[in-house]
Image 1 (tube, helix red, strand yellow):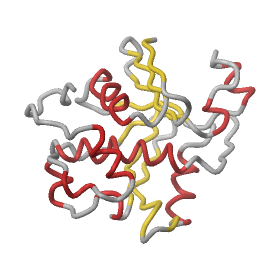
Image 2 (spheres, helix red, strand yellow; image 1 turned 90 degrees about the vertical axis):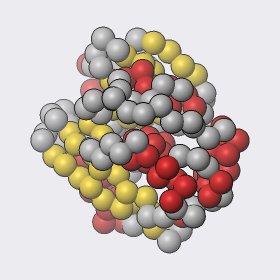
Image 3 (spheres, one colour; image 1 turned 120 degrees about the vertical axis):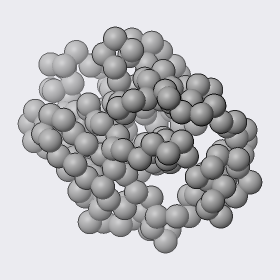
Image 4 (cartoon, helix red, strand yellow; image 1 turned 120 degrees about the horizontal axis):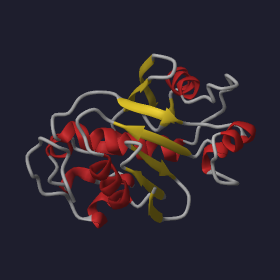
Length: 189
């Protein structure tokens, strides 16, 4: 696993331990930010997102105490809307959790800045116009295209692959990484 650019080379936990974290037992991991918390996934789940196309910034808790935090969740869904037709939908929680895993991983390296969102939900007509694949998970609000200043798209893609939460597309020329909660697959665009 490659660490983000300009960060120390830290040992990542085993995949098995990370999957245990999703079930609520992350205390045994060696990542610095996770080691400080008794249980990463039982903590309030916050996302800090920035959408350059609209200049919107959202830093909200969407999950806490085992339940959805509706006001924060709705603000995140609004930011992840199809900006071409200004339509927001209920975004998939597992996809948000994948983004939260990436955000937590970055924090473990001392990187505390927003995830830059290129694309979230896309209406099927927008997806067709943008050249998206037919039946794209973007049209089901189950995919997100992201980048982070100072972090290589390859590093984000490798961590996405490590999470094994779904598909990971690596687009170094366009400088973004696609993450989704579909079947596990990897590609370079």
